Figure (spheres, rainbow, N blue to C red):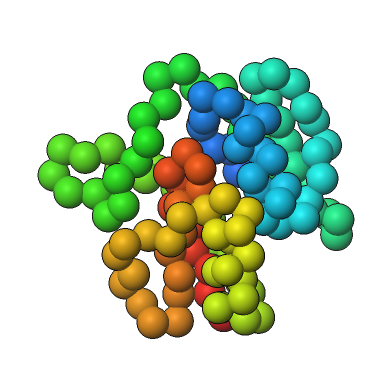
Length: 124
């Protein structure tokens, strides 16, 4: 496919009413630093490179429900984060500001919610 243009995933973007607040949570959680920092847009980058994690202002953002039922606002995307110690990583996430979800579908995965309700999964 010589005619295919080069495409590079630059970042995953999460909607929020306050990008700087949500970025601060993920800075604590992941230990990443800010690459871009504007009132309506923040991007974090891993020290080793790769795609970033961005946060954009969405005034009409509605917190998702996990797990969503009929008529509930559902998550549009979630982050999977590999860890070496599930219990220690879960405790770190909660200390950073996450909430352990009430519904846990798997024994080897922990579903947590960031301060804006976006689910993310820790797994080994």
